[in-house]
Image 1 (cartoon, rainbow, N blue to C red):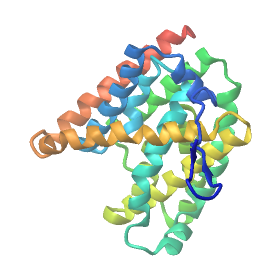
Image 2: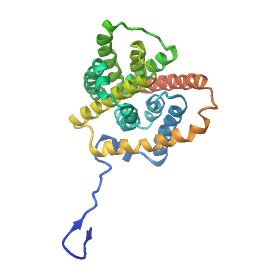
Image 3: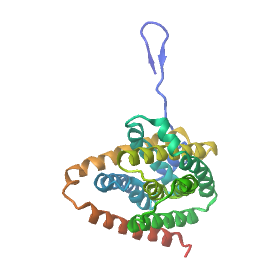
Image 4: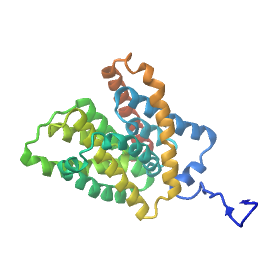
Length: 276
């Protein structure tokens, strides 16, 4: 407490209880090597994103699952995804026309997250880990195969709802919505800055819905959100570390190696869950 010499103004420093919320409590229970493992996962995710733009969750999630339950790992990665996509979502203006263009996947995303979070909360921890591992394997296979679809204008809206819903379920359970969203946007002809802006808007809406759904069920707290926001720092450090190497490494070969790592790590998650 600090009291002013004149007057009766008292300033109190707000105290954050690190054990408040599911994420804070889980991190508080980790020992130092495990905390370092969480930080390494976030830095590695940032490094891979800095080189090939695959995204932090695809790489970080399999590692984080070794130290945290899947629900907590999804929460931890939520704010880095939002904070990383907000600048791209706002870039170039034209928000309202863009939102109208991607209204179908946005609606699917909101409903998909509500369903996905409900499923994640209801699953036993080992089954949640197995489900996340399976979805990670699916995401890596989709990116390796890189299927190229073409959607007619008549199919764009219903397909957008389905792809948005599926991506949100993958986001809620395994924190990897990117592959399905990328497939849909490419199939509708989005390229370059338009693609980047559209996927960023969908991801921001998706993660906000996920956080609100968790909060609505009293499964997260402001402390959890603050910790998740702080997790953006090691991700940014990872991106900065590889910036000098970004133009020296062959992105295609590095991308394949990363996805093979994700496949192996996802299989290990399923094996560790004992559902087999």
